[in-house]
Structures are given as structure tokens and as C-alpha cells.
Length: 80
Image (tube, rainbow, N blue to C red):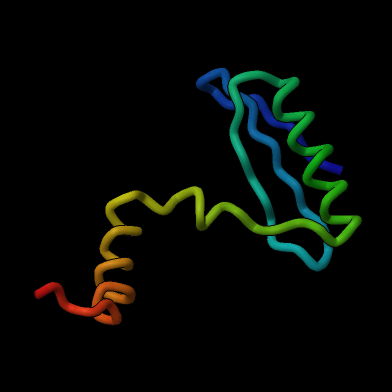
């Protein structure tokens, strides 16, 4: 079961702690959004469909472009 906490700034934080999964936390403006996300995420965990998305959500466009330049560009054929 997820824990919903109201933060001092007035937002809602949903915290999910389940055995076999790392602690998953996400912040929302509305309590209803936090409840819906927590219910959906716990359901995915039970069914085995859960994918940890936090690292991908933190990646910026700049870091993605740097990685592309480092990994993909060297494999391309040079322009003449």
C-alpha cells in the first residue's frame, strides 16, 4: 500500500515500498493524481510489468545529445 504525504509546499508525495522493488517516490499537485499513480504503479508491480522510470525522467536533452555524440557519431560514415 502506498503512503501519501502532504508536503509543506502543499503538494502530495506518493511513496511506494514493496519487497523486491526499490522505494519509488513521485510528487503531484493533486492528491487524486497521487492516488491514481500509486494504484497504477502498485498494480504494475504485482503483474510484473513495472519499469523503473526515474533515471530516464531525470535525463536532460543535453546529456542525451552528449551520449549520442560519444556513442553513435563515431560509427557513422564521414561526409565527403
